[in-house]
Length: 588
Image (spheres, one colour):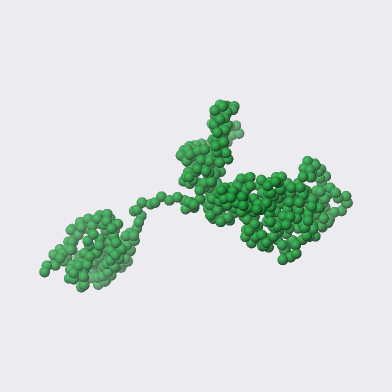
């Protein structure tokens, strides 16, 4: 029975070089086209065949090295026959044939035939020949699994969380005010909120980039010129151009424009930015748009860096009673609530909800009209409630989460049992509305009388912050202790305490008639820590060191200014000690 010859072999079993070269090129081209049809079994067979060919080639090379060095003429090695069965390449799947068949070198999934005995030069004197063969095989094997030829899928930024969405009604979160991002998740980057489209933002960005590039080129040209105090000719022309643009602006809105602005405000209210066209000159409006885009880009960088939201979710606004408040900082609300961007809260029990409908149903059933705990102070419509974190744990946790939205350095959220909360409210016909609060430890080793203090944003700059501080020192006086706020203080907290300490010291000095004054006496009467008193005197430049002694200067100009402010302020926002009904709690 005649033996079946494989392609690329002559009748005597030697390799036909011309025919094998052409066949190799054709198979390589076909291999690239059909590489996607490879099966896992064919890949495993290919790798095993490569390993066997390489090992047999290495043995032949070492056995032939001596003879190769002795002669200068090069001979190709004959292919070795397999004692068992050989394989034949059919569509890059290796199919078993019968025994005693000629063996052709298997091809890799990339279409390239691996190095075998026919590719090895027996007369080469190089010692690293085997290592090169191993390296070539490893590279070809790696190329078989290389997917770089496939088209890459389009990806958004890794930090995008597609569960988030823009809080602007009707916005699909696509585009960005800066024109440099594919998506946005805040009002500051929303084109729809700014009455623009995503394409308009991209167009404006390209124009601004072109102007910035021209400006940088002009600066580079003028950098090498002699600097002069007088404006250059280019600057003079630019000034005249701006003046002309501002002169062309109409003095006011016509009837149609007023109707358009009114209709826009009635339909969107605060959910959209007011129409800015024709309010000012086009030049000034473009400057304002540039500032908006730059601020939005800075906020986007902060968001991507994780500095603003400690992750990806940040609550933008909260609906609290009749107020809608913009938040300042991230608060660790549950993710299912934080990713909404807006929360709805009951102003009495502080429960947070996802929608206006849920809030309306809750308010119809909520029986709370004031904070839980004991009312220890009331004067007029101002009340203070003492809430124990151990007895009213849920309320205190919700209060801490709410406070974190407006405080940067707050770390207490859930461990509220060791603390007492003093909640100040303002009463009207509907109930007692939250004004602010402060918390203090039940047993403070360092005699801190305040751990955390907050005035709600809608009540700021009305004197309530100073009332809360004054109330905390009033409790310290009743306890016959000297108190101080827990450090570190926030920026707003430091301003409020410095203002309170200044008023207390000037009030004390205004009533003091002696010639010698003691820091300790001031501390005992006002319950303010001596360290805080000294720091306040130094900030007021009332503490001097002269001839080895510390002197307190009684600056009459500061006292007179304080008197004038107190006269204008009146007695509206003050704490009356006689209205306090409280005894210090026993240690727990």
